[in-house]
Amino acid sequence: MLDFSEIPIETKTTVLGKIHEELQSAPGLQVLLENVYLLIQEEFECSEILVSIFDFYRDELVYYSPGSKPVLTEFKLKVGEGLAGVVAASHLSRRVESLQEYAPSRTIFQAFGVTSEHVLASPLIRRGVVLGVVEVFFPEQSTRFTEAELRYLRVISYQIATGLNYFRLREQ
Image 1 (tube, rainbow, N blue to C red):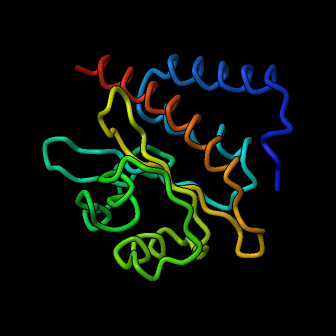
Image 2: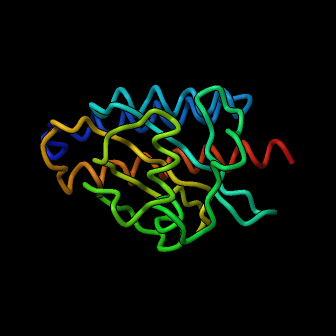
């Protein structure tokens, strides 16, 4: 696994600048989510990425596919329910190596074809408001996650939330 503390600050700044630039230029949710998937795949050696976006009207997290269409109605979670719901409610990132206590999430992940239970999940927060959750899955054979990886996902999540907020403002 990559040791993020060894990455020079110039590289980190360049990567974050690229994320910010690409997310800010996204003309729609589809491009925004495609950029999110590409950028996270570049930064982490992950097997899958899922993004859920908070629906303020229904008070639930809705999972989106890379094509940006909301996935079937059963792929929604209330805040506090499942992994994404717990992350959204607590406003805290989580490192999970077993989905035993997150049964609703396990069902959703299986429907997406995700078999890994090694997950880093981070809320997408902008100005104290949860806009969604990003869940990054790692192959079963990967080593344990480091605290540096979780911190790095938090930084990327902030940039994603900035782009998502910008998208929402443009759509209103």
